[in-house]
Image (cartoon, rainbow, N blue to C red; front, top):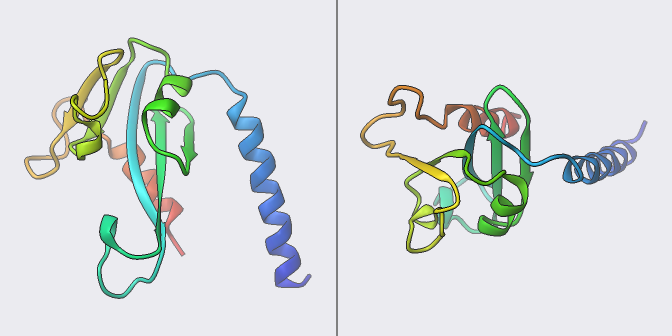
Amino acid sequence: MNKSTAAYYFLRLRIIITQTRAAEMPFAGAIEVDESYFGGCRKGKRGRGAAGKVPVFGILKRRGRVYTQGKILLGIMLDRIVLDCFVYTDTYRSYNVNVLDMSTFKHYRINHSKGFVKKHQHINGIEHFWNQAKRD
């Protein structure tokens, strides 16, 4: 099979999976939320400021499923997460109370400069998902 044909069929498969997953029930329970950046050139500046990077927002139910989308934050969270859940995020400024109204969730922020886990408060599950998604 030609590599272009394989790429075409994998793209179609991803579209079908995305459409099917979007129709599923919202997340409930302990939820981890994080963003990651895909694409762009590896050399030079990395992370949020690198040219050509596309932000992807992810929601993970602990010991459950993952939902990702190329759009960011509040609309997705309100659509995909049951209100009054435990939501764990990092300290990225978009999750600040002033920027994003997190009052509908029980919001816990994890400061990675001070530590990665505090009892059961962590976002290691979604971080692991991003690591696996970016593997070559």
